[in-house]
Length: 104
Image (cartoon, rainbow, N blue to C red; front, side, top):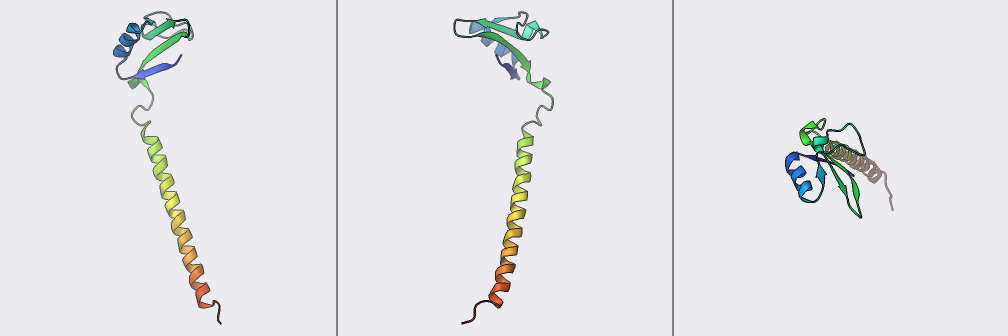
């Protein structure tokens, strides 16, 4: 089962308990995790462990969302520079071709 990253781990743990999960137990899938933040569920259709993480513990928290925007911004600049260069080259080509173009 997946891990849950949240700013409010206590609320998530309480909601999982209300949904029928058993929390505060030793993890079965990945031993060594903090039992206080491990919830397990044994149902007829699904069974597994869920581990709840405090969102502040994620490395680079807060900057993670900025990376895709920075990459998209950089790609936009590259595409605009290429478009500008292509348009400039076409104007030069068309301009020089018009002077020595077809004479009837």
